[in-house]
Image 1 (spheres, one colour):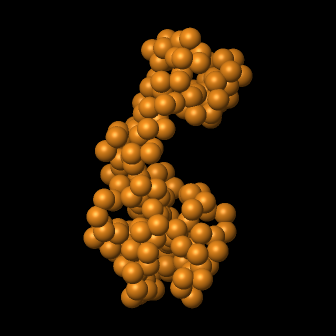
Image 2 (cartoon, helix red, strand yellow):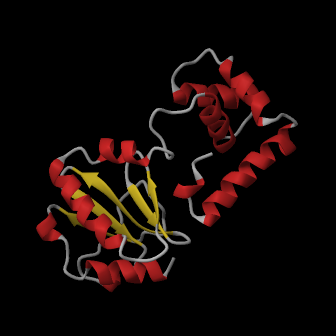
Length: 190
């Protein structure tokens, strides 16, 4: 399970229920599942997931919990700095991310969820995310695009479906002057 410091209360509750249900529904403790996972002949994560599903009937989420316990990742939710450094390696994109991050962090009760492909911001629920793009970064907000002319409907983004408005940020200069107001609107909805 990811470190609780990087989870919203709802996420923490979901992960706890997933772990608690594992033993209740399968009759095997997490420790027993970990030993089974260590016997997996596969070495790649996706292949291990497929093996856990095929050989033991675990679903995606439960298999992921078991595999994370059996094979702790070098980079993961519990090591957000390493994830962020890997994701935001491009200096121009890093500068955009830093500006957005500092603006988001002016709001209270923020939980930063660093993922491999994007940085998520939540209060109770995710209200904002930013990911690197070949032309800078893409910002997603839990706002209807009608709230601002710069917002567009999302096109296949890896984050929450709650983030209904996106904007391309090709440079720091492209960050709108009303960013804090837009973030606050999205934050209020979470």
